[in-house]
Image (cartoon, rainbow, N blue to C red; front, side):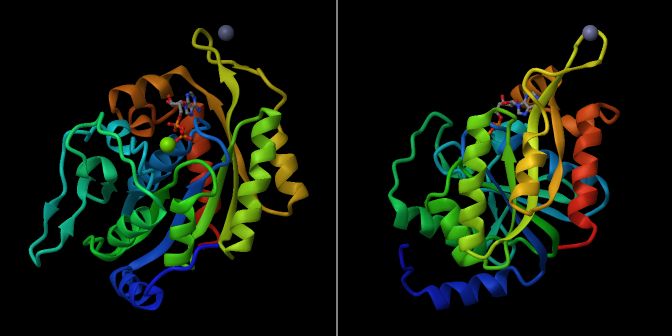
Length: 271
Ligand SMILES: Nc1ncnc2c1ncn2[C@@H]1O[C@H](COP(=O)(O)OP(=O)(O)O)[C@@H](O)[C@H]1O
Ligand SMILES: [Mg+2]
Ligand SMILES: [Zn+2]
């Protein structure tokens, strides 16, 4: 495990900067494309809708897509009054920071090695004017590489939500994420099984594509909480592709209900 330079100074600065932040939660997974960014953004939107003050931090440095999902891809962060950096405001109580806001254009590739990634995550945590937040939700890239490792080292009290899909291979990856979180003493809030069953676009009934319940079984096996299943809904793809906040646009859907249940579970008992 790599050792950080000046870790104590940086940790003190970050601790000071995040002193108004109550809960920090990182959304992780073993594989890409399982819905981390979808889950992170919709949990954040659901919390914000309940009146909580929420920050979203996109530490997927190679594939930062929260700005696009939330329809603010063209915005940029600005200097705050005290010459620090202000996140991009999505709504009154939801603000976003992403690597995407620092890139010239969205097709620009980021080729960075571990120490540089650690540095930018340090700045996201230490130099951004987050203010008072009830929740800071962090969207991580897949796997257990530099970004989630930096996060765990820089903010030791981080909670982890692990996203999986019902396919067997994805569940094997869950074990790696769980082991990573346990080794780094993250507080595992639980597992979310995404893309679990399909909502029929014609009649709204649920169709089972893969055997469901794998997420719940593995949660039980590993003795961690199961936070819920989210079905596949074509409206999710449409919304995320066009930058429309899904749970706001479809307040009565099964998927929105699933997000509300997940938010209830992570806020009660509060982490
Ligand atoms: N429950 C869902 N129903 C339908 N599509 C989904 C669902 N969850 C995610 N997706 C879609 O799957 C793709 C990958 O999701 P994303 O959140 O970007 O994954 P990750 O961040 O893990 O790489 C996106 O196109 C997204 O719209
Ligand atoms: Mg993502
Ligand atoms: Zn049908």
